[in-house]
Structures are given as structure tokens and as C-alpha cells.
Length: 235
Image (cartoon, rainbow, N blue to C red; front, side, top):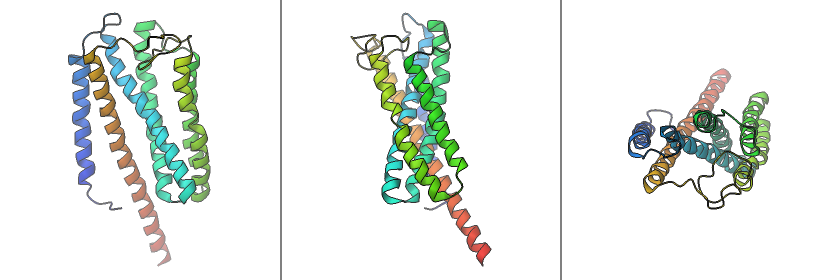
């Protein structure tokens, strides 16, 4: 992998910035004011998007982990670890934005209902994944242990999705589809609200892909530098 000037990476960063600005404009200006929650509901577009990206990132970690166990190729270990880092960051942003939305709407910063507790548990599990990688020095052992851990840890992601629909004891709304608390499904979004939501989902997914590419390239560059140092030391 070339580690010099990355024109594609620079272009992706610029496009990401433009998309984020456009998403903010749509959420703050174009999207209509929600009747019951008022302007604070506009956080919804950001909150849903970053949570979605966090879980998507953990799915990519799952794929990378499976592929590493099948191939023992370093590139899959790099992909899995890089995506886990980004997933933890995006899930943190989801928790913060959710708290900012919940406080004026439901008069709570956080509630330990089953669904939100599982989200917190998922976040802690992936922080432990990153801690595991830092604790094991041997690269091959670290990659194998991390791959197994990354596969098992993903179980919490579909469980979170299902629990949000099966539990009737939660303040957390279900955005798409029915749930035990709301058999009719959805949040009653207007056509414009849905458009803004899906644009925001696309935007933050694009941002994730951009950051993942940059993080993977950085790790490959670090590997190349370490190899170069070894060659110099042996010469």
C-alpha cells in the first residue's frame, strides 16, 4: 500500500465535510419542528446516525475477525481493530447525544432499562476488546485472541436490536418497525423528516468509511515503518 500523498483520501475528507454541513442544515433548517418535543427532537437525526454507524462498525469487526481466522492475513486484523476503535467512538457519541435528547424530553439523562443497559454493556465489551489488544504483545497471539473476541462480542449487537422491539418497559423509541411498546411502529415521521434521517444516515456512514480508510492506511504505514526499522537494525 502506498503511504505517500493520498489524493483519494483528501477528496473523501472534503466530501465528508460537505455532507456533514448539508446534514446539519437539513436537520436544523429543512426538517419541520416536531409537534410534541419541539426543536430538541432535531438531535434525533444525529443520534440515530451515529448509533447506526457504531453498530455497523462492530459488524465490520466481526467480518474482519472471521476473515483473519480463515486467512491469517494481517490486513483483516487491521480492518477489525480499526473498525472497533471507530465503533466505540461513534457509540460514545450516540450515548452523549441520546442523553442530551432525553433530558428535556423525558426528564432523564439516562435510565437503566434493559435496552440501554445492553447498549452500555456493548460499549464496555468493545472497550475491553481494545484493552485486550493493548495487553498482548505478540502480534499473532493478539490477532487470534482479538478475532475470537470480536466474533463473540458481536452477539450483543443483534440482541440490542431485538430487545428494543420486544421490551414494553422502555422510554427509548423504535425508529423503524413495530415494537412491544408501539405495535404500530415508527415515530410518526413526515416525509421530510424521513428524507433528512436517511440523508444523515448516509452522511455518517460515508464519514465512517472515510475514517476507516484513513485508520487502516495509518496502521499499514506503521507496519511498514516497523519493518524498515528492523531492516536498518539488521544491516
